[in-house]
Length: 484
Ligand SMILES: [Zn+2]
Image (tube, rainbow, N blue to C red; front, side):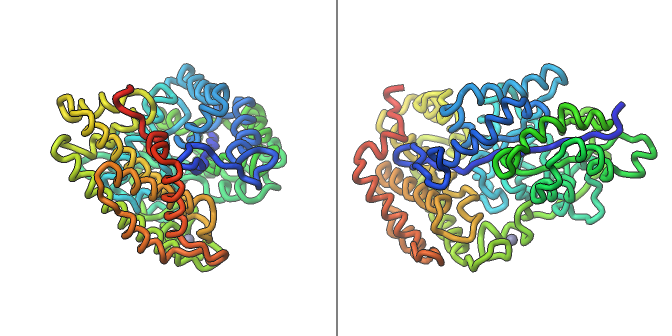
C-alpha cells in the first residue's frame, strides 16, 4: 500500500480567439512562427504532453472552447488525449479527466440561470468528447460560491479542486479531501491543492529542472509527518496552469513525463488522481468555503470586476465593462424570455440543452420542436434558433480573460465586446428590438489607459463589419434549421 501519493493537476485552457463573424482565429504576430497562440501552445504543450502520454498520468481539464478548436486543428492529438483518460477508465474504473464550466466565466459573478447553463454545457461537452459522465469539474480561476457547488452537485458532479485559502479555516490539511455540506442534505468533495508546491512549480523554474531531485528532496519534505508516522496514505496535490509544462517553461513536459513514469516510483511516491483517490479515501471531515474567492486574485473575485492590486496599473475600466455587459445581459434575457414564452414553457431548460446543437449532435429544429411539444412554424423556429445563438454569444461575452489583464486594448476584452455586439445583432434580426444604443452608451466608459481605445468603438466596428458581411454575418453562425 502506498503511503505517499502525488497528483499533478493541469488546467489547460485558452480563451476563444475566433472572430464571431468568420469563426476564424486571426493571425497573431507574437505567436510566430505559428499563425496564432493556439497553434504555438499546441506545438509546445498540448501535443508534446499528449505524445509523452502525460495526460494519462496527471489529473487534467481542457477547456471546451479549446477542445473545440483542437478537434479541428489536430484531431489525432485530441483523440490521443481522450484515449489517455480511457486507459485509466479501463485500469481503475474511473478516469482522470475532469470537466470545466463551459465558457470559463467567473461563476460567482454569473446569474443563477447562467451558472446552470455553464455547468450543463460543460458536462454535455465533456460527455461528447470523452464518452462518459464527468465526476469532477474545474471552476474557472477556481472562483467559487455555494450556489455554484450546489448546482454542480445537483447535476451529478462529485468533486472540485480549490486553493487552500478558499477554505473557511486556516488550518486546512491539503493532504486529504473534505466534504462541503450543501442545501437539502447534498454535499460535494473538495480537494485543496498544496499551496507551497503549486506556487513554486508555477513560478520557480529552478525547482523543476530535475525530476529525480524533485522526487528525492522536494516532494518528501512536504508529506504530513504525523500521517507518515501512522502509516496513513495521504496525498500531495499540485495544481497549476497546464501550459506551464512545455509552453511557459520549456522542457517541463519532459520533467512531467520522467517524474510520473519513473522518478516518483523510485522514491516510493505513487501518482494518482482525484476520482481514483476518492474511491478509497472518501472525505472524513467537513469544511466550509469562503465564497467569491479564486486562485489568481487575492481580493476575492475583484480582478474580474474592478481595479485590484493584482494588475500593475489602474483598471477602473473593468467595473464599467462588467456593468455594461451585466446590463446588456439582462436586456437580452428579457427579450429571450418574452419571445419564447408563447411557445416554450421553460426557455432556460431549452438553453441548457442547446449545447447538443452546438456540438452537432442534434438538429436545432428537433430540439426546439421537442421543447415546444409540437411542430412550430418555420419562421418561429428560425427566430428561436437565432435567439439561442444570441444566448451563446451572451455566454461567451463573459469569458473571464476579458478582465484578467490590466488593459482593455487586448484581444480578450475586445472579443468579449464583439461577442456582445453579435448577440445584439442576432437579437435585432430575430425580433426587431435594437439594444445597440443602450449598449453603446454603457460601453463608452470603458477605455484603455494605454491607447485610449473605447469599448463602444469596438462594438460599433463589429456592427459595421457585420453589415459588410450582410446575410453571411448571420448565416455563418446560425444554421438554417430547415436544412438540418
Ligand atoms: Zn486581485
